[in-house]
Every structure is written in structure tokens, then in C-alpha cells.
Length: 318
Image (cartoon, rainbow, N blue to C red; front, side, top):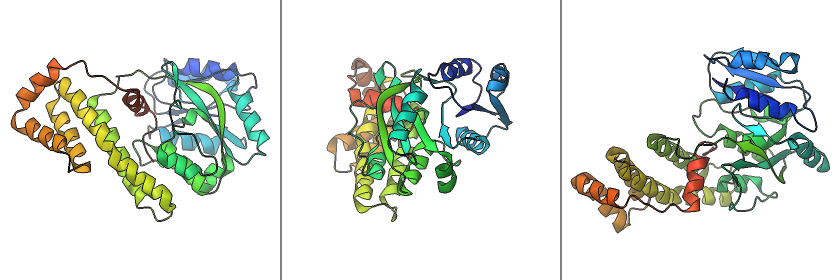
């Protein structure tokens, strides 16, 4: 298994402890210290020969995972972020599903995020068409993925040039290469998330990235037509998310960020009179709009948008 770690001295020990509490012990544990400036390497080294520690200059999580995959000696790779944990039956259950399907496949399970299951409410995963399910946005945490090492080597690793979304990019490459995907119905990962911890700027940037990724997919000639159409529809539907963010940012007094998000919503839905009026008001009478927004500070958040905010810390596009 591979654990990428950057300045993770506060959480790495808990992650490693969860690995060594498994009912089916791991064959090997590789920790890749991605240029940490704290005691991350010391924490990893304190586990002795139970952990193989690699050090590299800071190159990002995708590069750290790639280094770990290359260094791993086993035929199967499991991943765990340094601030997350596995429940004790993770490896036993995942390997059971893998073996039940004859191997040579991707197995993934659900994760607990803030006391709820990440995949709750998502459209069911279609194992007969994993590409379509991934394009639809089915949430898969890399912490919950078991995959043959040779498959990762064959499709070309995690892309290191993306700020967000290398996980989904790799999963899409595996699905497009014909690797079967099987869902383990159990939730065996605990994903550490602090709702509201992301800045509004980061939320906006993450949504813009998702929009660009979906537009790329909608124009990808190697994708089936039905998957390209789904990507295009998801891209257009992001007008709701941008508009929601605009309201949130305005209520926080971040007028410039609110303008950017409102403008994106209008670009995606240019026939909307409400969006047109909102954009104009934000530029012409921002103080009046700001006062109104603060009077209506108690904005109701639907479960959908709470999920979107939490997911933006994880995987937000290929």
C-alpha cells in the first residue's frame, strides 16, 4: 500500500495505526514524504521496518503516489492519504471482493465523511459502464481503491499536471482501458473533512476546474457519445453551483468573488433573467445587494450543496 504524506506529522501516526490494525495485515507499507518541512519522516521512521520510507522534493500528491507505486513490490496497490484512516476490515473485505471476481479489476468501497457515507444519494454505479458512471460524477475516494499495479503502469500513472482531479483522471484511464470495476458495498474508509474549511476562492477555482474538465470530456472523441453528452450536461448544470457560491460569497462580503461566480452562472445560462439581473446589480449597486444579502444571511443549504462543498476537498474532476 502507498501513503503520500506532506507535512502530516499530526495525522500520519493515526493513519498508520489504522493500517496495522487490519484484520488482514498489509504485505508492505510505503510512505512517500513529499518534501515535508515538519516531522513527517520521523513519524514514519518510528514504525521501524514495518514501513518503507521514501523521501522526495515537494512535487505534489500525484507525484508522491506515482513514486510509491513504482517502489511497491506487490501485485496489488491500495492507497491511503496521510490524514485519513481505514476501518479494521478494509483489506480483508476489499481483497475478498477482488478475489470473488477473479482478480484483474478495480475494487472500490465507500467512505465516511463527517458522519455520513460519501456515496449516499449518488446515482447507482453501473458496473457495466464504469466510464459513464465516472463521467456522471460517482464519488470514489482513492483511499477506497484497490487496483493491480500492472494496470496503473500500463495506463500511465496519476497525471502530475492537474491541481485537482488526478484521481478521477487515473480511474477514467483504467476504465477506458477495459479494466472491470466492482463496488464493495461497505464503507471502510474514514475521510477527514472539515466542512467550511475551504476558502471561497478555492471553491470557485475548484468549480472552474470541474467545468473545464467536463468540457474536455464532452469533446473527447475517444469517449462514447452518450458519455460525452452526459459530460456536456453536467458542465451546463454547474450554473446552479456557481449561483449558490455567488450567494454564499456575497453574504460573506466577498463582492469580487461573488461577481465572478455570478458571471459564470450567467455564461452557462445566458437566457436567465435572474442571473442577468444579479450580475448587473453586483456591478452597478453592490452595496445595496450586499446589505440585502446580509439581511438574508440564513441561507438554506440543500444536501446537494453540502455534498458539493465536501467533495471539493476530494475529487472534483478528471
